[in-house]
Length: 346
Image (cartoon, rainbow, N blue to C red; front, side, top):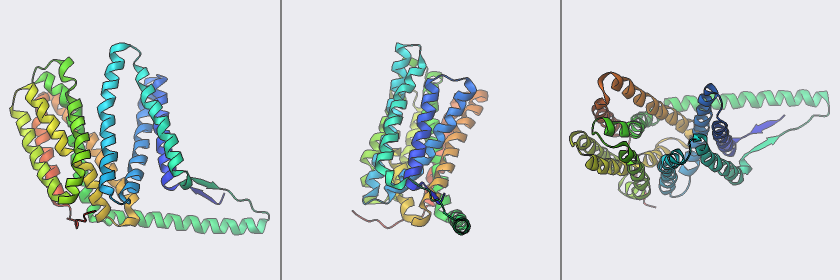
């Protein structure tokens, strides 16, 4: 075998396939241990697709608009998913039927990824006719492999030495920590602290994710025109103020409105951050750099909700508010250290 080329298309197809396998296994209702493993497949698939899709879109003309669109689509999934789950839960006890929906979407995603990027997925195999040519081919393959390994190591080394990568990673570490903590603990807080009716407050996250979706669609262009750095700084301060209002105002309706506006103002953070990253980070290390940023971001989205849960189990869910205020402050502070980029009006 001379080469096994995957590239952008290979990574996207592999990621889509991993997610599809995860959904199909869940619909099969496997033993709990295997059910837990399916989340590894889903996360692996999401990681492949996140990094490669953002690298591809960041290189397009008017990238900030397309980044806003693809991340708004992600928020739309977060918006629709819980509603579909609620419909399934209220109409049947067979909860596994829910996974037919993401499974079907996963199949469509896999087919579209293959169709759009099939020229970037190739497996070339060559056979040698003599032992001498086999030896020569083997030597060439060794050289190519060593060169590839050296290139990969050099790319990772340059990525680790790139200061903007770590600054953006820190910002996304706190941002995803805030976003997932809010989405995961919002209903519990409203039920326990605000004495809200679960059948009603259970839909409050819909407003939150809907706000994020609209923010990513509507604020990406103004952020690009006015400058991503000042816009995100101002939005971070507004989010901090809104979180304090949410904390101090003991009213479920007011809290529902506040959290929706909070989602709207935090909407452009991810896409605008990716747009800034595409300008600050050298092109030849985009894939490795964005991969590292996503890893650190997912760590924040894993650590902070878990820490919140551990503290809440001892001190009560009221600790959610001071934790979120602190995380939002750290998020805004970390963004302040990200270098500015020249604005280009396209």
